[in-house]
Each structure stands twice: as C-alpha cells, then as structure tokens.
Image (tube, rainbow over all chains, first blue to last red; front, top):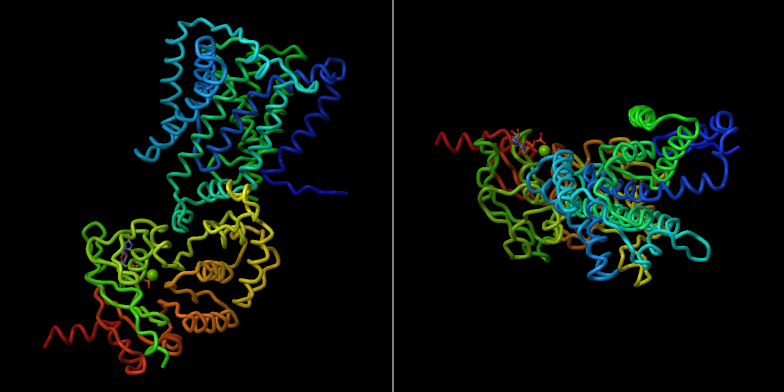
Length: 311
Length: 261
Ligand SMILES: Nc1ncnc2c1ncn2[C@@H]1O[C@H](COP(=O)(O)OP(=O)(O)OP(=O)(O)O)[C@@H](O)[C@H]1O
Ligand SMILES: [Mg+2]
C-alpha cells in the first residue's frame, strides 16, 4: 500500500478524501454526486483557482495580497469598458497589464517604504474598491462581444469548456514556473530566507516585486474569466472571495510566511472549499451559514498546517 | 616557494573604516592578497574579521576606504556585485537557505539550465545535471550525503559548513574568503579542506582564511594579517614569526608597546 507522508503539502489530499467520504454518506440523497453538479463546481471555482495561483506567487516570497479581489473587479470592468471602443485584443491586454502593474506597484511600495504587504494591499483594496464603484456608478457593465464571451466564458474547444481550458493551462503554467524554472526556485529562496537569498546574490527586491506583479496579473485574468462567464462586469465581483481564497491556499499547504508552494495542493484546496460550499447549499444551509463555515475552515486550515509543519 | 611566480595583487584593501551606530569596528584596515596566495586573517573575538568579510561580500558598505580587485577599485554595494567582481565567500553564519535542498543551495543563483535554447531562454532548470554535479562536488570534500534533495535544515552543522564551502569553491571565483570554515568540520573533512585549499591555491586562486586555530594557520597559510580592535596591526610572512608573536599581535600587546614608546 502506498503511504503519503502527512505534511503541510499533503494534508489537502487527506482532507479532500475524507470530505468526499463524508459527503457520500451525508449527501447521497442530494444531487451532489451528479456530473452536472460537479462540473458546475468546477466551472464556478475556476476564477478562484486563478486568483489562488496569483496569491500563491505572493505567498511564495512571504507577501500577502489582499487586493486580489479588488483587482479582479477593476480589471474585469476595464476590459468590459474597452471592449466596445477598442476591440478584444486591446481590452484584454490593457486589463492584464493593469493588473500586473497594480501588483508591481504593491510590491514596489512594500520594498520602497519597508512596510508589510498586509498594509499596502489592504490600502490598495480600499482604493481600488472605491475606484471601481466610482467608475461603474454602481451599475454592472454588460458585455456583448461574442468573441470575448466565447474566449473567456461559454466557448468550448473540442467540447471542452473554455473555462476549464483556461484553468488547466494556467495551473500547468504556474506548475512549470514554480517547479521547473529558475525564477520559481528564486521565489522560494527569497520566501524562505531573505537574508540568505540576498547573500547568495539574488535580487531580493526585484523578485518580490515580480511575485506581486504576477499576483496582480493572475487576478486580472480571473476578472476576465468572471466577466466572460457572467457576460458583464461588476464592481463587487471578487469582493467576497478573499476568505475562501486564503483558506484554500492555507489548505493547499502554502505557508503564510513564505516558501515552497504546491500548486496542485492549492488547486485541491479551492476545489475542496467549492465542494463544501456546494454541499452546504444542497443541504439547505443559507449563505450566512456558509460564510461562517468558510471562516472556520480558514482558521482550522492554518492551525492544522502549522501543527503538521512543526512536527 | 610558489609565491614568487605569482606576484600579482588580486585583492587590495586600503583604509577600510566601518562604524555601527557610532562604534568604530574597522579603523582603517589595509592589506593585499596575491594570486594563489593563502592568507590568514587573525584576530580575537570581536576584532572585526566578519565585518571585514561582510564588506568584501557586499553585505554592508564601508564608511571609508577602497577595495580593489585586479587593480580596479570597485563599489561592492550588493552580494551580487561582489560575486561578479570575482569574490566568493563562506560566511561565518553560512548564509544557506535552510528550507531549500542541498542541491538547490549549491546552485542557487548559478543554476545549470537546460541545453535546449528555447527552454534555456525561460530559465528551465537542468535538474539531473545539477544532481550529478552536486554529487561530484561533495566528493571533493569527502562528504557523502544520502539525500541531496533533503532540506539543508536537516543536516548537521558540519555538513552545512561543507555545503557552504563547496558552494563558494565551485563559483569560479578568483578570491575565496572563508570565515571560520572549519569550526564544525570532522577530522576527515578537515583534511579534505586543507588539501582542497592547497589545490585551489596552486590553480592561482587567492584564499583568505579566517581561523582561530593558529596551528592550522601556520600549516596552511603563507602570510597572516592580524586585526586588533579594527586596526590591521600586523601583516607578516608566517615562516618569519612564531605562534607566540602572533598571539602578541592578536592581543594588542605589540600595539600597546608601540604606543608606550
Ligand atoms: N550589524 C552590527 N551592528 C552593530 N555592531 C556590530 C554589527 N556587526 C558587528 N558588530 C560589532 O562589531 C564588532 C566586530 O564584530 P565581528 O563580527 O566583525 O568580529 P569577529 O572578528 O568576526 O569576531 P569572531 O571571531 O567572534 O567571529 C563586534 O563588537 C560586534 O559587536
Ligand atoms: Mg566573525
């Protein structure tokens, strides 16, 4: 029998397996284990996976990025607004660039002012949320561009929904960056020990800024995916995802203090939380109750991963 | 001796000053090192040896003074500047990333990339090449580690020291500075390091060795520079002085005698 050692990075596999086991008992009378429902969970969580990947980059160097949700909203809106006058390419490019630049600016402020990313990105969260509300006038911006909708929303290639394709390719991309490329190794080194990484000649500040830029860029991409799926952009999108996001990466074994990231773990972490939410809905829990559960999961996930780690 | 053939200065430190919060730690340190020379940097605890090393490493900047490498005055304002100038350092605190593996530490910032040009462009790592080379490098210090993918945190103090030494040695540097590299080494690794230092020196690499072991120093080094309270108080060929004299320099006795007269 194969045994997987219990570490912060493998914890999520156990959690996932156990939750599914419990669900087979508790939810067997509901529609949980139908293909349609599971596919639905998969689709609904795909923008969150993309955000979680972004957050993983920030965490890998020891940063946190609370502004992800706000970047999602703003960049989705910017794309929606530019789509009509400038066309698909420019709208998408501008949105991604904006996300990356906001992230890089977050990172730059942290390095320049020497203040924690918790504060910088919290401020950015407030600023961007206000900006999005101002820009939108609290109205949602409809998207009618069929190309955009097919690319980021309801399109499919060979019968595979484009949202799933995005998900798969971005997970692969992140996996490669973190595990196969020099840059990923440098991210972990900086996250694990800034002084040692600096002494070994790494450009610690530059690497940390890049990590935040990636976080912002992935957030923008999540904004496009949301906009494509809902065929509109709204100022409040992404606002409520923060807790699920942090709970998911913690479940996935990311240390909130920096260091190695297991992107498959993060993916499973998001899915696990998506499944739990879905299971709660099917069992008739209200959205308030779901929120309470997510809060509890966040705390439990962090406690358990740190306990497992310190063993 | 070999020194005569290689009479070419690779490192020249002149008038280096450093103070921390108003406390003078280096008070005008000056010395040269020639190609292929093995020079000891001696001094009591707190004499300023590691501070000098940190200046050379680009970890901290001196308040005054110059560092010349191959007759070029350089501003070593970061560790990567120091590395580019041809210096490799084994820090007293080792400066390893404990969470990363042995291989990752050995090759951090000097990774071997994939031979395919396209993959190389993106910084694709050649992990098997690094694993192979790591094995070979460790053999140079007679060290066998069962798992080169284990985090450095799981190693013993001596094993960590070996990793830090090897990392410095395979950097292709002109000058290698080792800050107390033998303090945790086992007898066998110690002998391996001695012969490795001799080998490097014969290849023209200059070595600066910081050690409290005067016996070791006299066996291995050509010359000693002695620091006392941040002053360089002596720069002597080791075949011209005995240990008692070295101790006198290190204790500042010589300096006090000079001041008295
Ligand atoms: N970052 C720092 N801030 C303030 N003081 C420092 C700092 N680094 C070193 N010092 C002081 O400088 C003096 C010299 O320290 P240094 O580490 O260079 O000594 P050393 O010669 O390497 O000693 P040892 O043999 O114990 O390693 C000490 O008095 C130390 O307290
Ligand atoms: Mg020291």
